[in-house]
Length: 492
Image (cartoon, rainbow, N blue to C red; front, side, top):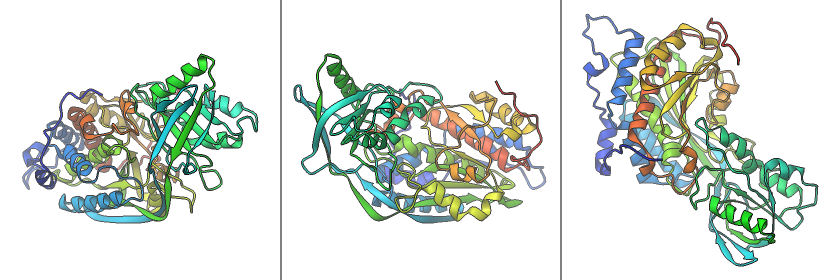
């Protein structure tokens, strides 16, 4: 990522003031006298868009203070809990309503120490990261011959018992794409690889990091429980180290590695969702749900994943709150906990998306729309709307407002809503997506390089502009996104 404009490094004592006083003048948002009529929703949406582009710095100030004060925020950790308490206090300072924290139990995973090295044919150090929820190795570590597979499907094709006493390695490279589709194609090896390797007798699992960079940084990420646990120690290799093992194998060498991890678990931990509303003026029971996640992996500071996602939706909702007139419907911001290590099967873990859908089950019928920001901070380039409104007036209005900032319409609804709002969408809440350019996102995703300096503030502001405008239009409308009349989109 190559930032073009960063916000100045504000001292922490100034950040609170920046967050608590959003300098949006009434004229900038179309202020009116008591005798003047309210502005049309499309005009207000355009004013909100332009106010965000003017750069009031609330989004950057939020992510800067969050990451500076609390650093990494692993699910179930003290850092995550303290960040949630701080966020709730900030919401109140900013004038949001119904601010509260909803806790839920999790099994927290603690990384501990980790190391790896090639021990044959010659000793060489390796850069690795233990995968989330992966168990520790024995105290002395473990070692074994590496058996390499070009793809996850190749691993699954290996016969039972063929990896007994060995270490399985999936070497597939992730493909860089604008929409991030390469991640979905590659990440299944990370989530399901340890289980498949164990079924074939492997004592450990390695994979080329699920990322698009060539840096000597390993990308961590969650793995899937099998019968209540991740069955073998599992590690991601940095790209250059995966290359090294591949080249040795191509030279005909038998590669043996030594792996060590002191990872551990905290069984009685808790995570939490932080909830805050901009209450609707006419139909407050109808909710437009905006989501991002508060937790992060432990290697960087979670600035881009997902500090910026939180900052985008908070700044957008704050702009809407400070408009001369509240929207008809309620805008709800939820900062979800325990997204990164989501294990939705109790008692092994939980995550905020399921906790929210369960706690608010009775309200979901009046949740009119849901969206999530969790793809970094690069510009929004595409809008995906529910099928019911793809060809209707709502879509036309939204695109008139968003086209000037480079956002085009998609011909189909979102294929997935996102991890956090996904359970609510599965329960029937219509979903929208403001797709971000993910071309550089997976260079730093889940690495120690996920830090504040990677944020491009111009692009961050463009995100806020898109969210504020679209959410205002949805919240100030009477559109039924489930059944609103309209011609279905043509399928390719």
